[in-house]
Every structure is written in C-alpha cells, then in structure tokens.
Amino acid sequence: MSNHPTYIVLAHLPKDQKDPIFKGDFRLHPTEWQIFDGALGERQAKAKAEMYRKYFIEVQIRTVSVQVK
Image (tube, rainbow, N blue to C red; front, side, top):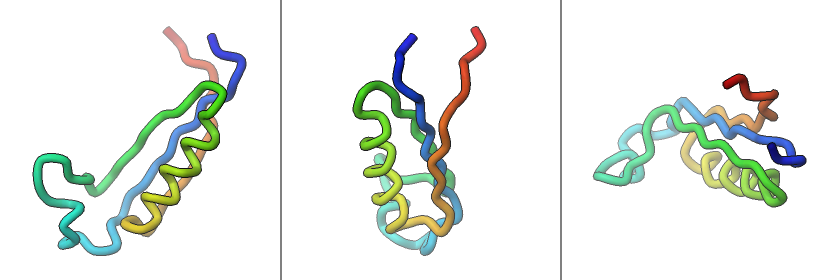
C-alpha cells in the first residue's frame, strides 16, 4: 500500500459531442475517469483534469479512500 493519496479524475457532459475527439478508435467517451497514485499522483491528476476541461463541462478531482479487497 502506498503512503501517497490516490486520486480519481471524473469528467462528463461533453461541451461538443460532435468534436472529433469523441470519434474514432481512441476517442474520449461522454463520461471519462482515471485513477492516479504514487508520488506524482496529484500532479498527474491535475494535468489530466486540465486536459479534460477543454472537452467536458463537469470535471472533478477526488481523493479515493481505502480500497476493500
């Protein structure tokens, strides 16, 4: 278990569903999420959120609590 917090970036509500970024094999979906952890997790989460803000109306970064296995 890492000593660093885990972050999740959540994005939904595309600004323009017709934008080419939402088409093709490597497209963004109308709802996207990604998890980051480790020493650079916060920085990576913030960078991904900034990228998502170009394409989505709603973008959030949240910390993730303890995982249950």
